Image 1 (cartoon, rainbow, N blue to C red):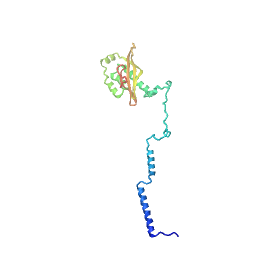
Image 2: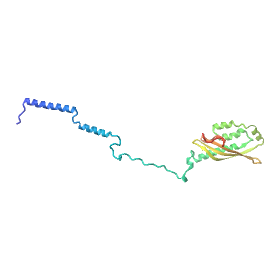
Image 3: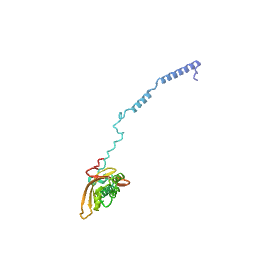
Image 4: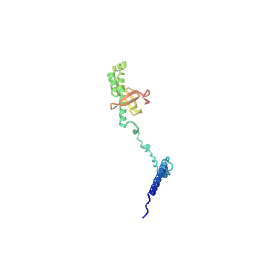
Length: 220
């Protein structure tokens, strides 16, 4: 049988063990076995490298999107009406209003009152412009003189061109004529007029009417 330690020897061994544990604890508290931490710190610093450093040729980056050319239209296939702010039927309706207004302007029955003459144009005008026309209905002595002759003039008009347009209005250039209904068949070319039409109350109406060389050039 192994010889058991004496009481003094047991105390000595126990004391040595305690001393070893104390030294080991001090060693750990002073950063012992720090190699793993240094390695972890190194890895962390490596993860924080600026973008592009330490990387390969960029194979992991997403590829740039290829260009997307816009479709083009051959000249022969261009649809000019598609560039206008209104469809074709709307443009025709606007032109019809301008033409009807110029026709009413040239149609004068001097056997009737000036108010009746202007009323035909007011019916085709915006609210504001209709009020302006109503204030212009005093034809004076000239109307009375022509009334004695019972003269009647038939108006005619024709749209010649579009001067300008935007999203809310169109300016037409319209030629107007007035033909007297008597034996002479005299006619008077009234000239070209710039007629601005806009949409009001769901219909095309005349907003302004001027000689073509005097205004409505579509500048404002």
